[in-house]
Image (cartoon, rainbow, N blue to C red; front, side):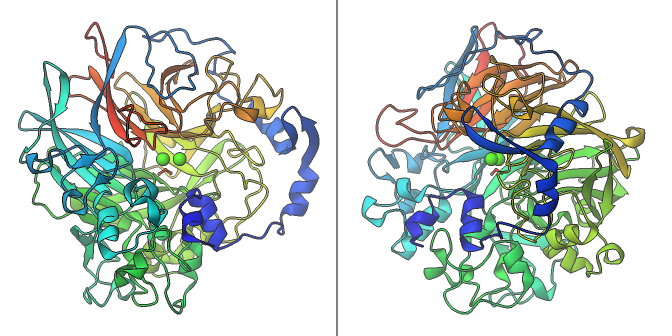
Length: 626
Ligand code: FEO
Ligand code: CA
Ligand code: CA
């Protein structure tokens, strides 16, 4: 397969192109028995009868009837299909920062509308494809730490290359435009702007030196030619969602790291490569120019990525720390809470079809006002098991339960989760914990393989109560309440907060749950964050063609969900082609910062290339919105 085809594929399709899953498997017979096959508007579609059984019964009893949004502080907006941002009446917005904007004066004018950014300036500007972000208050200043998840090589490289780097410098350019940015922002006459040349401004890229900590650090599995000690790693990559620790540091989550590695020669031995989708040709051809990415030469380098990495935005000279105790997988985000018994809990999704939802619980307790970084090196990882009776449990991943050594559990966490029988999920994206009650939510974005193909480890992905629809194209949001009001408890009760769907063309489980209606339809929930009032902000990364199953949904959008009544209302739409991802609020909670990733057209400049950007949104009357 040509490289230019690989970069055009979605992450999951890329993995499956390199490692095709069987199209039938041992559970097909079971699914066949459970499935009723009917034709529906939009084409013949099969769905599990489990969906009809589970779809209604598992919905929260508090979900509202199909009513248009009421009880929100804004008038819900219509869908859009244009190349613009839309917010409710009485709200305003502006672009805070775009890919290529200078973080230091020396990079003024570094962005060229025709050619993008030069390699020399590529680590002095805001990176491409903004994603998770968090706001920090440091010495009276406001800092945003924000991920640049990946680059679009076709936008950044000369047209003749067709998106495949031709030189080491072109690889360097791509590497530098990804990673993390820390930047000071300040509010002036023109609203919030980036403070150029702030001493807090910082770029962290695929080249930044960081430290491995936790039980995997120093192990033979993470030793390389460049780092025989196995403790010092270059780079954090494919930084997707985010988290904020209780001690005010930033957590950046390494998601589709596997695609950066390729094999120019022989594949090393080991089941782990296959389970993590590593091998063959890399998505970006890095391996042809930098042996670090060539697993034929450096078989352990990929074991040093796929972690949650902690960064201290208040200290620009600090070394980022990869927290191996939180496991290695395609980390979406990391939602930290303190359990009622004082321990630290981090909820984390592994975003791939049929992978798992995880929880880390520290051994030690956190005391307010202290740096709890060491707590993240010492604890237990768990995988979630959702039972069809709406209870669930966290299964510990330990040498005793998995038959694996601790270091292996942390390096090959997916295999440990398979060994104990966690519940395969419909692509766990962000987890968000409600600040006003002891409960948490996970966005299960979609999974066209549900009930069709096993996951990369061959695990059964038959429909089940929490993932109730075969070939799930719309997604759902599940929530759980820990037993005893303690996030560290081993058991929980769960329900589905919403099943996305299209009630204008379906009258079955694909219509979605009762809190989905013609006025708030969406697909593929992804980013989520709670505002301080306990409202759930939901961001989508889905099909934006507004046709077929997705007719009436328009461009990707941000909605607000009332978690008491179940009502959901559309707050914002983003330009056609974009997903909306990343959300944080100003210190006074009057401004929301929203990430707009991979826009289409020529947004926001109306000229040149489309530019991923962070947008500031506020109420014209100056009231709090977050
Ligand atoms: Fe980077 Fe799963 O989104
Ligand atoms: Ca995401
Ligand atoms: Ca997504």
